[in-house]
Every structure is written in C-alpha cells, then in structure tokens.
Length: 131
Image (cartoon, rainbow, N blue to C red):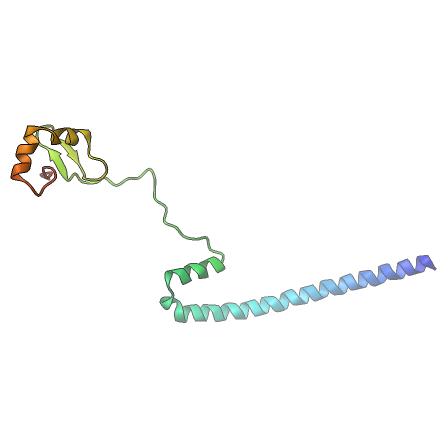
C-alpha cells in the first residue's frame, strides 16, 4: 500500500511539473507579446517627446535601456600643442601662458632688463610671442 501511494505521488508530481512548464511557456509567450506592444509605445513616446528631455532624463532613459553611461574619454597620449603666447627675445624661450611659470621666465622677472621692459609695457605680463 505504501508503494502504490509513492508511485501515485510521483506520477502526480510529474504531471504537475509538466503542467507548470507549460504554464511558464505560456507566460513567456504572453510577456513577449506585451513587451512587443510596450516597445512600440515607448518608441512612439520617445519620438514624440525626446527633444524635450533634459540631459539627466536622457541619461536615465539610456540607463534603463541598459546602455552604459557615456562619458567622454580623454586620450592620455594625444595632447594638443598649444601655441606660445610669451617669449624671451634674448634666449628665444617660449611659454603658452598655461601652467607654472617656466624657470627662465621666473629668473628674468628679477633682472634689470625685465624692470626696464615692464616700465614700457605695464599692462603685459611678459613679451608677446611675435608669431
């Protein structure tokens, strides 16, 4: 009697598992159909209102859609050459005016030649590059 009960339970369990697999397959089909309809609606709405979204809203939409956050990457090896802004006529040293003052310019600031030049050009920091 015990053996028959176990067999009937195993049989009922197998039937239920099969029914569960069928129901899960039906659910997946229905969800796919709903997703297709929802996608069409989302595309329609985005086409209609996308131009009015802020950058934050666009970023949120991209994140929800699974896109990686887009950040501009700066190439470390490629640096723009900056044109010189200042030069020292007596040494031909040049400086773009960016960053720390080069040693040659800092040293020239303490000389009598700099003071003489500065008295004639009070509004300029260093002599302008002639190019």
